[in-house]
Amino acid sequence: MQFDPALAAQQAFSRADAHHELGTDWDEAVEAEATFSSTAGSTARAAYEQLLSLAARYPQAQFYQAFCIFITWQQVTEETIAHHFQTGVRLCEAYLGSRDSRDPQDTADVTELYGSFRDGLGLNEEDEIQVEFQRDTPKGGD
Image (cartoon, rainbow, N blue to C red; front, side, top):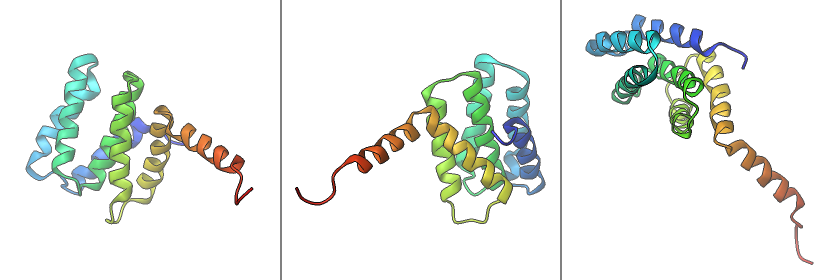
């Protein structure tokens, strides 16, 4: 990975604050982030889910959305399960598919993580197999 997702998460969270992306829900995000960052296990996972719940309420909050993608990678490293990879893919697709102007560095980092989330689910391997299959499939008639 060409960047540190934990550091990127901190930076994105700060920018979300500076841009007042969550309005009156900001205090809830700060509390959940503090819990997520300072604990582990089920307590951290509950805080993570709370952070994602806020993200669902603010789909246009570009910095906060990037923050959630970066912390999802942290969840993957903490608890390597398909659900976290799937969440990461879903968040990345929503972020990258948005027509809103996005921060170029966050976009590059999210794009890189998108590939990693897909790799974790074996989706890129499947794509390579499909490419190989298509290359080996005869074209035209016999």
